[in-house]
Length: 256
Image (tube, rainbow, N blue to C red; front, side, top):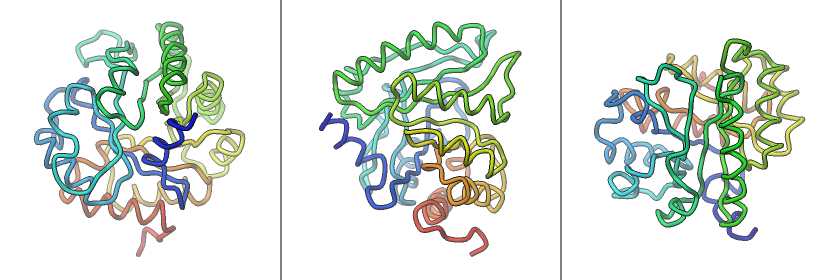
């Protein structure tokens, strides 16, 4: 597993054992959205802010990764769907772990929606990806959310299920919704043997976002944050990402 260990060091800070990851896979789903029009510039600003890693679909790796500025970890997203799909919770695999290795990835990520009509297919796909990751020594970030008619996206029981599913599948990290309550989320985190990262969700104000992150990291003791629009749609991306990194890695107060 030495290859996986080496790659994990490029994703999770070796000193704090926490991470700030900025996913930018939204274009596949939503098209040409604010913040992702000039990928080179956005990635440069994110790396300048000190983020540990970014997430891209395979087609944008050559266009937008490591063109200039500080080096930054690369996670290639394997799952996809578009906003034109009648079922927005349906995700399919569009890339393999072997392709990600050829692209120089430090990790891969997949998306699973628990409670969706095609949950079983997404779980089966995840099983195959885990097998490939173990073969190639590639870290896997599982983005798992409670979504569907019977799911409550912020219910601690359902969020806890999402984290446990990632762990049972064999993922190395899991991204899911923050319950909004430090105590209930701390219980979920403490029961997991892999790092639990909170999703950024819809864009909110700077201070509100930073308070949420601080509570999740330092009260619930989660492993980091994986936030997209809440980061790359800021007026000053580098400045905001820097603030997030200081909260996550240095326990700096949002008020400061």
